[in-house]
Image (tube, rainbow, N blue to C red):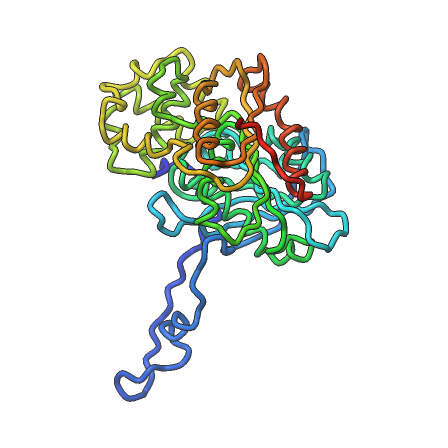
Length: 398
């Protein structure tokens, strides 16, 4: 659970209790208009269905308005166990007067933090999203963009940071939510819209998971291609390799503990570790980096979670590359990445290629994690644009 001092989110709809109607009728006779009758006639909720929507805005730093219309949405998705969940996000459409079917990009942001105030939907209206420029580049092409907040950002509960399945479903269901938003449909976002997926770092992980899930989870989406960069493709190997950033490692631990409460994160922490984790749960990425600056995971724990078979099993379940996406993929990574090992993404490329998937592998020479995000973004968008235009992807697996 979130800390009690956190502000309640406005996005969780309040449950409304229906009063029982007692009619002067024979016992057992169903009375029209009762809750039971309404429940029987209501259509079943589907992943991607809208729960609520309200006007929002999309601004570029430092708060520069854009010629767009935006809505903050709450939509249905599924959690790591396949159970119904609610996720918030943003749908953005260029205000260009276009009414014909337009492409839709479902965009997954990189690491922003754990607190609700870090969510993309909170930062877009303020012009404080560092990925607004990349998103605007897609909008300038006439595409609509759906951006998930991920599970637990903007909604109650801890953010399931880097837990693959709920990240992937949130990305796919954001696209469905955009297609089902009446205002977006009026502007050309429909079930016939060609769909692209894009993300970097955590967003690359989420986009890659969306790619692997889409054929079975969201076959209704007309996906044309996926562009993923800086992908933490195997968290277990990445963590075991050492040299990790304590703040990111603890965020991964918080995220998995939220998805799998039986892992019992608290039992691995010492007093300082518990205090740090409490701070991380409510902080954005810069705050969390400062909170753990100069600290190692050993200083904050009484025993190593990676020594536990339970933790090993859950982290291993997030490994990408065990199934073919079935859609063309553009995969890019900095050769000098200091956050996510270059070798992990080389292995992901090899795994997908070995399963017969079309993969365009694009190393970014001498680039670290941040530099590859900047240098690789425009080529990734260009590649997606070619797929949306119907040009075949050749790949370079051979």
